[in-house]
Length: 489
Picture 1 (cartoon, helix red, strand yellow):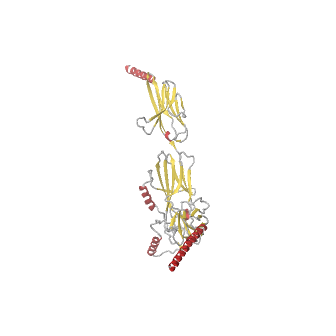
Picture 2 (cartoon, rainbow, N blue to C red):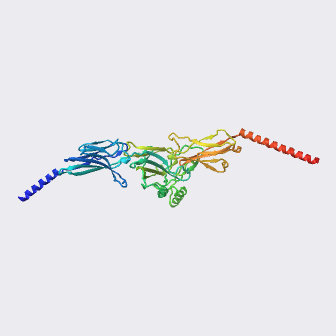
Picture 3 (spheres, helix red, strand yellow):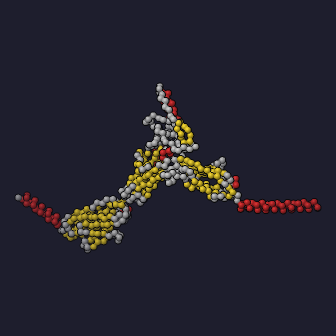
């Protein structure tokens, strides 16, 4: 009998103790990612059968201030005095309830990102001097959409190469995003199937540049047996037989196996085969404007992605697309860089159209040059195709004088503008050539300089000649007078 009686007494005492002590549970409702500038309401729910003592909200700082606490008190509710006090700005009003405390953060910024805690205290039923405490916490994540997106060409400006393949790289730069966005490339509106390479989240250093160069050498374009469609022909075309066909499935690296190597390999195969097969290859017109090799119409695109943290907590992302450039197919191709980010309702994009320079438009100032003037010849623009708004990548310009050196003695001048200072009459009729080129092509244009006489300089020279003649006449007269005097004496 003593056993059951003792057990009943124990349960009764535990129930009495729970009634006197009371209970308290605190929880904060979860939140999704918040876009910068939005208004957020943090909700702290608590249940208790005791009397409320206070509610305190804290924001936990990620940086501990010397001599101070890492927690910043942002709101206090004191039930003893039935008052509430905010430790934040006046424009952030707080609403408080008995079983739910809410904190409203209008127009959240980057500095609002972090951990928030809700502390609740109730009176112990056994004594008003004792307080039971409980707390809950939540991490507020503020996301930021990208501020800018741009597409540039790496190593620009760069010359056009007629005799060897070039690797070409487009760089998509996205700044101001948090977290880092997803970046991908499209060509003519279709998603590009890329070959991913090594990724790095650190800044671009010398070591990375060295790796890029080695990867660039190993990622050269491939030889292919497919014959590409030629562009419109002009008077600079050359008839040449294409005898560089290979066995199906065999690939050779540009820069390692050239046309000579392929012909030697073909000769060795023909000697080893007892019954060679003769194939008639028709004559194909190849333009001197483009490289003299056969390239694949479906190149490999290599993709590299790098990201670096900025000082304001956002990320800068650089996505690079590298492939073996084919001027015949890539000219006037539309490439776009698109960005997906949780803070964006639709993708953000930037696009460029690859275009070779064509038909440079030159302007001369002054339009009627005179002897002694400073003449400026400038490239004002180009003739653009229907799908291009500008020449991309940026072309490089080279100026030369046909049949001689420039006025300052140099053989050539680089830049969009050629300046001829104090032109002499000897430059009249001189022909100047401007070569504009980028990796997609090269073009030349000429202009002839006509130098007119300068009446002001001519009058000045006549006045000087008259003064010199008068002085010489006076001197002659004095000499004759002196001679006559000497003869008389």
